[in-house]
Length: 170
Image: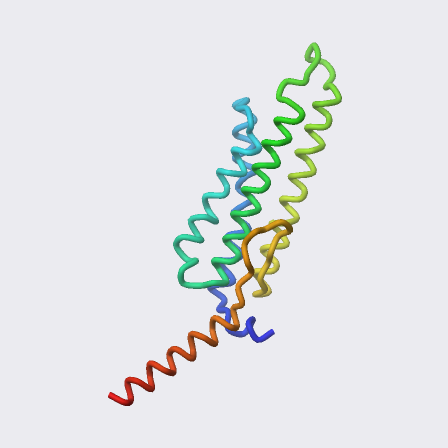
């Protein structure tokens, strides 16, 4: 609870933005599908990954809270892009017979993409809610270590106190 008091509203806003920007994958997906581009789902997920990556590079150095949320958003997009590529590889691309009825593989592909999309929307909403409440998030299978924000703030305050003491000695 103590770590919530140290996180500013600006940090929470940037953490929330890193998650909500992931929803831009869906307009990009619709554009790619309208152009009949193969592997549209993985490309859309990777394209939407650029915004949290930008937030990580620009704002992450100043705030470990923002960096943690941006890293988890990048992980989620990369993970779902790899799963989407796996679905495309597993079920194949062209699964229409005579243009009339989809085959079993096409139905499985549609169900797989629908499931990935629902998980993505749920994870995005969960991440943005956690950022709003100024708590950290770690998605399942994520390899990013959740930082101890309170320890980092305490270390910073101790370093500043030492610096002030040294300045007073001079």
